[in-house]
Image (cartoon, rainbow, N blue to C red):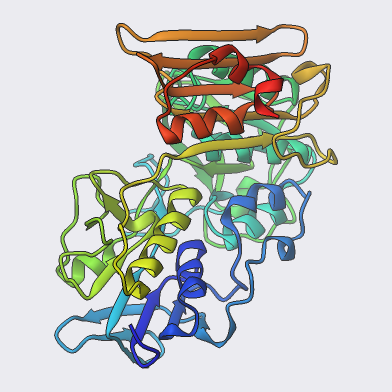
Length: 453
C-alpha cells in the first residue's frame, strides 16, 4: 500500500478510527462518520448517564481531517468502487473498510410501535449511542420510575447508572439470572445482591409482553399503582416535552403483571449493522454479521469489515477489545511488506466496574471491605468458558466477609475460563495464562493476590 492508495472507512467509531490511526499517512484515508458528535468511547456511556463523567471525557483521540462527521454512506457501488453519501458527495476507493458497528435489538413488544410507524413512544429509549445517552440523561431525575428491559452487561450498567441518579429502577431479565452469558450462577447471585443494595428491584425469568402508552396530556395525570408496583408511586410525566404523540405509562409482563413507568430502557442486545453490505451483495454469515476471512476480507476482496459488524470464523464479538484487535490486524495486513499473520480471533475478556454515585472510578481495584451491602464498588471480570464440561475441574475461592468470588475452569492442564468478583488483583495473571494456553503449574498461586502482582 502506498500513500496514493485511497482507503475509505465507513464508520467513525472505535474500530474505524483505530484503523485509520494505525494506517497513518501510508494511504489517503477518508472516514465517514454518521454521528455529528466528536468521536467517543461507547464503553463509557454508562458513566455519562450516571453523572460521573461529562460527555467530553469520552472523546477519542482527534482523528484529524480524515474524518467527515455527520455524513452517512447510503450506497456502495462495487463495480465503480465508489461510496455514495447522503449529502450528495461520492468517495472513490481502492480499499473499502466497513466498520458500521451494530444496532440495538428492539424486541417485538406490543405497543412499542404504532401500526406502520417506527417512532418510539416518548419515554422509551435504546441505550447505544451518545444521543440515546443524552436523551435519557435529560429525562431521568430523582423519583422517576424507570424499567430496564434486559439484564445483560448493558442492562446492568444502565440500571446501576439510573439508580445512581436517584431513579426508582426495576430491572426485568427474561433469563434465569443476570449476565447469564458471562457469569455463572454464584457470581450472578452476588451481582444480584449488589444491585439490590443499590435500590434496584430485579425480576428474573420475567418476559416483557408489551408497553402501555397514552397521549402526553393523559400520561401526565395521576396513576394508581398496579399490583406489581412497589408502595411508592411513580412520578408524573408533567413538564417533559415529548418527541411524539404517545408517552409510555407502563410495562406489561407475560404473567399479566403491570408496572407503571415514566422511562423504559431497552437493552436486549445488539445485532450487526449490515444494511450497506447486504445491498452491495456481500455475503452474510449465520451470526448475521458480514463474513470475513483471516485477512478480514469480505466476499469482495477490495472490501474489508471490522468491529461489531464483522463475523469471523462463525463469531460476532460485539465487544470493544476484539474490535480494536481487528483494526490493528487489518492495518498490519494492508501495510506489511513481509506479510502479516492475519487475524485468527480474539479471546475476549469482559470487565465491568459498578460504583455508587460519586464514588471513585476503579480499574481492577478491590471492593470496599463492606462489599455490596455497604454500597461500595463491585468489580467483575469473566473470560473463556465459565460453565464446565463433564470431566473439567473447577476451583472456587469465596470470601463471604469481603464478598469476593473467584472461580476457574481447568481442562486437563489448561485454564479454559474463569469468573472473578470483588477483587481483580489476579485477573491479569489468569488472563495471560488463558490467552497463551500455558500448562498450569501452580493454580493456587494464580488465584491468590500474590499471583496477580
